[in-house]
Structure formats: C-alpha cells, structure tokens
Amino acid sequence: MEVITPTNFRKDMFKVLKEVANSNKELEVTIKNSNSSNDGVVIISKREYTALQEELYLQRTGTLENVFTLMENSTDKDFEGA
Image 1 (tube, rainbow, N blue to C red):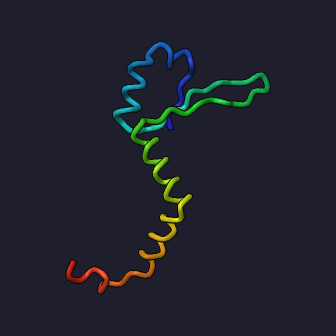
Image 2 (cartoon, rainbow, N blue to C red):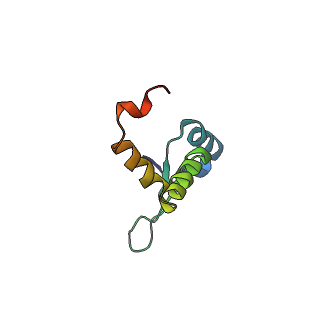
C-alpha cells in the first residue's frame, strides 16, 4: 500500500484521489500522534468500498458460507447440460 504524508496529500489532492479511484489501490495518509503511534487513514475507491460492503453483507447473512459449501461439494455432474 502506498503511504503519503498529509502535506503531500494536500499538495496533490485531486491527482491523488483520481489515481486511487482509477487504479482501485489503497492509499494510507499517515497521521502521527503525540505517543508516536500512526493513526492514519486509508483511502479506497468507491468501487472497492462497495465490493467490501457487499462481501460483509454476504458474510452477515450466511450467504457466503453457503456458496463456499456448495463449491466444496460440487461435482462435474452439477454442471452438465448447463
């Protein structure tokens, strides 16, 4: 994951946001606290955010586990004539 300082983010904000949106890559903006820990933020594209939300929904509803179970137990015959 690419890391950038708040100063550099402010300097090239539009360019950086456009790059994140187009590349679907994450970007970390570092923010150091007084105790020297990094409590930065991560910027992701809306497309990536939507995909994460969908996956979380599938997990919460048990759908994802059901799909994995079906995949594990499938045979070639399940797909004949399809």
